[in-house]
Length: 495
Ligand code: UN1
View 1 (cartoon, helix red, strand yellow):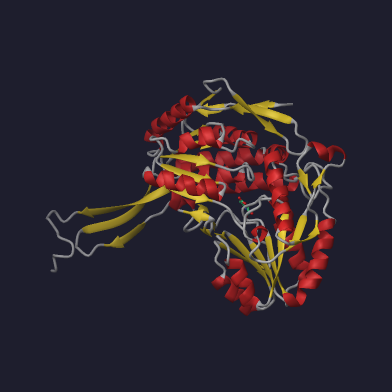
View 2 (cartoon, rainbow, N blue to C red):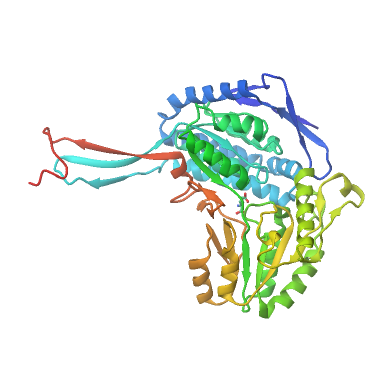
């Protein structure tokens, strides 16, 4: 049954003022699974106004009280995990265990941020003057625009929304127009937990129309964006010029390095999961596997054999290993890159085609594809965001790390080795926000900061922990209180 979801503005579920709608399509079979409003300027204006109004009270609501609401939201999300996970799978295409994992990441974030309501701690330090105290506190920033992608339809919105609101901000959330239903259900459940009207506002629409207008809106204090590097960099430039806080999580070209002493069974399993999990549509996907020349031949042969054995199909079928890509445009982009790879002389070791057997013809399925490539090729440098892995031979550790680093991106990275010294060198020298040891490049946990270097990330990081998203959604305020009853002069009074 098709779902019809609405915008949430100031606590009221409503259509777009224009009455226009957008359809959400199941990428496994091309069927329309629901519709949402296609919002225009009027809807965004109303949502920003509602968020500004709600901010006045929400920033003053004690953070532990905000936390109690989030705790209830976490419980509701948990209760509806199966439903959310299935919706993610039918709307985004990832296999069901991954759809459930997506929902779980949102649940984890909700419990974690509920607890933050009782922390949000600052510092107290001694003053250099008598009868004076000094402290720093975290304060909210105001109204945030949250712009999220389609590859993690509930997890990434939760990474942004929950830390934003626990800190006392209010938000206007614009999810990807390819996965609006999952995001819409997420908001329904979080809102049901008892959020005051206007704390979370949801406006559906396209990036070009709704997203761009929202993120440059004068009533918006900050923008948190996850998506392509091209859009992120453009947005950062525009928002910088408008004096808005901005944080962008963008693309990746994440390497797995396999050393000659690695456990090959583990490395191959990791490369399969990192490269073809979520059909390669993660910004953390292992799209490059850089293998030591001594084990390259054996690795390639076994990796290719196992990739050929992956079953591609509808993500709701329990026997499926890899689902479709998100839509026709993305499928064409991936197939174009496969042609680019062939033209620039990369050797196609397996895959390379769209799958159209039987019911697959209705969806957007591409074979798991492995190229033998060299580091300067475009397929080894540019983000493809699909099930395409570039296999690259390295002379040794130093060469592998140079190859790994010699791209514009720096989100995730990994090394498989049994040598503790190799792990230390990789930890030190890999230019990436995340380094995995004997594990693939995907699977970050929410209690640590998430984000990259170079063209993978700009501004503050996402998710939890020191340096995580609380730094994105709060500013430090410093308070000096003088109770001496006289004028004291810092740096000048010496007795
Ligand atoms: C993304 O690819 O956009 O670490 C996010 C991971 C997931 C999040 C990925 N927890 O792969």
